[in-house]
Length: 252
Ligand code: RET
Image (cartoon, rainbow, N blue to C red):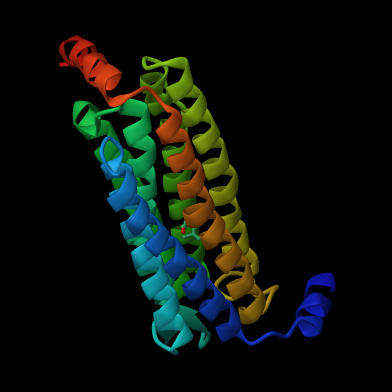
């Protein structure tokens, strides 16, 4: 099989990928901290969430690199529960970043934003249960997780996007770019899970760790970078507060 041949040819130690992930994400975390302090006013919420996302991820990778955060599942195979703690904390914040762009003020659409973030946490928790179990339970929870994921995607392309459409053309463009990148990258996770050690076992742990590391770095690091370069180009704070005055009575 092609994948197992690739695995043998590239038998890099799993911890190499964890150390690389920790290093990338720590640098990124420091970048957001410095940017937040230097360039904060007007964009501080974006900097704060991006900083926290990278802080959690860098800490998770450090823990995994040091041999922590794994347990043996019902199938006798070790799995990293640390990933799920990371995702449970960071993916809702990535969606919060997106919601901040779409709504300008998330408080206006708190129920919608809470529903999106709640479904996302449900997706991660059911994914963890799938990873820990075997047989019917594994696949039932995998499907549940995929349904929650699909619901998140439908909401961000549907109701949340229609909120972004009420703002400026620039905001909608940013929203579409961010949502497109997010959808593309996030769709790869359930595929890696399926072929990886927690699913069908078609790729080994090192290959799985490499793929997740690349995805995590792109989803947190790349997404945050594009987000910040976009929000800095968007309408100035003054214009935004006028926009809020218009939006609040209309939607209250
Ligand atoms: C799992 C397995 C079960 C089915 C689904 C999954 C989706 C996971 C996703 C994770 C996204 C993680 C991100 C991390 C950022 O650093 C739990 C793998 C649907 C979408 C973006």
